[in-house]
Image 1 (spheres, rainbow, N blue to C red):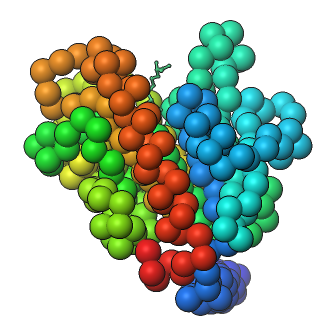
Image 2 (cartoon, protein in one colour):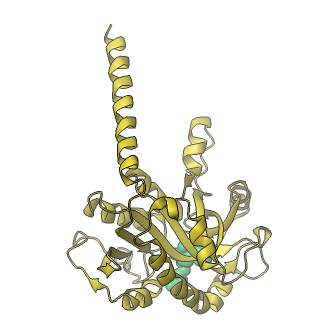
Image 3 (cartoon, helix red, strand yellow):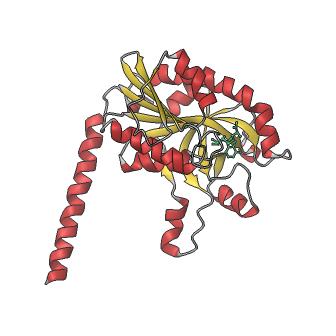
Amino acid sequence: MFLNFCQTYLTLFAIIASLQVKIVKSLSMGEPIRNVVIAIAMEAEADPFVKHLSLESDDDFFPKTTPFQAFRGQYKNCDVTVVTNGKDDVYGTGVDNVGTVPAALAAFLALNKLDGKADLLINAGTCGGFKRKGAEIGDVYLTTAAANHDRRIPIPDFIPYGIGKIDSANVSNLASEINAKLGICTTANSLDKHDVDDAQMEQNDASVKDMEAAAIAWSCALTDTPHFGIKVVTDIVDGDKPTEQEFFENLGAAAKSLQESLPKVIEYVCGRSHEEL
Ligand code: SAH
């Protein structure tokens, strides 16, 4: 009796929850994008774009206990918020807070602060590229999905949770417009890789590899916010040079390429509907 009641209650709850998701999504059909969050892990990657759009630092955007930074302003009738992960104070290193934990937290807090008003979140940054998928240094990629390659949980129900693949918003028109390639981004907390990572990255069918995209996609999924990544290739994952060496050799050129692409992206998405992207 009690079990039956619970089952009915749960079914009703599931129906109401699915209706609410549909209502949220149908409301945004065809409507112009007016509020964009751009999540960038590293300060050096964000700086030129913040200056380009004359965005102003908003010190009250994030809780004071976090290292995250927000820069806000208007572009073409669009509210733009650039979010960076700030510098590490917890371990006392002072380097950029790269990796999944700060990325997910900063993205979630930003979306929560905007209280459902964010129409789109763009994760911008650098990445490793796979030459077997046609990636070359300096290429600009827009993500079609993000997945994890270091969350190995060999228990059947947990395998898809560990991989955690989340589709990106469809941005194929934008990709043609800015001459970007499209591909899946695979994420983990290491700049380098282990043999076991290789197998999962291949299974994820990844074109590019980073340290944030899948985590940010998870925060976006919690809040039903459309999202995609724009990633510039600094190093070739399946090449012969060590990643760190190649990363530093190409960081300058990649940062420049990102700076050329980001303004074009914001120009294209602001005022257009999701369906047009
Ligand atoms: N030491 C560097 C930061 C390296 S962390 C510095 O201070 O300049 C690498 C950053 O670049 C992460 O944000 C990650 O998302 C991205 N990245 C670039 N190439 C990568 C690769 N091959 N694998 C994983 N992440 C990569």
